[in-house]
Length: 221
Image (cartoon, rainbow, N blue to C red; front, side, top):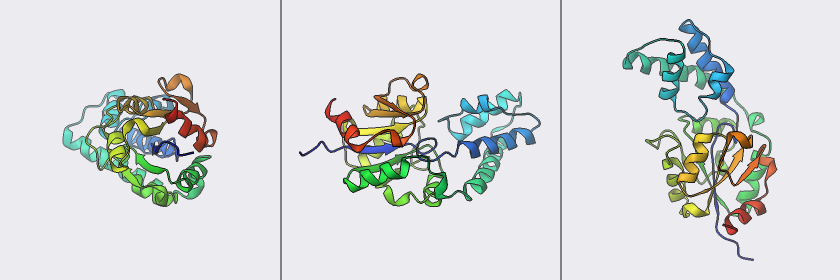
């Protein structure tokens, strides 16, 4: 049976790998260096939020005002610490089921793109040995608007030469789900249903879905 041509677009953090722990450690180190603490609960609120906006939120929690130039310096400092940490990542940090699903998609000739806000996605994919699976990479270096704006996913669909309605996005953050819906794409949520309203399917990790189910998702639309 000739199936519909589908394409898959993956968010990176929390879907394929978990770098959230390193973001948390780097932001915490920054907050501590400014004389206040930063909790896990606060860190949850930064999911899917870009670097400068995250910094603004953290400074706000700490009751600290900084000039734009100082903010640039602080954001750069945080990123330097973060890059040092992710430089030590390895393939063992790929989340369960991720490599297997990417392999199955590749074997069936389904195109794959990355759609991530991270500016360090290239380094992370390289360290975790996932680069070769991707036909296109759209990340924080190639988009101007961050999620929930659909730009990152629309650009991914364009690079894969696939209409948005035939694309399936894999997301763990609410802002990412909103971006995918705004792009008129199907969405597989990775995580808890109550945190990810609007998804077509919810799974705990990428071992929870088959290529057949993904194709069916698009064909049933």
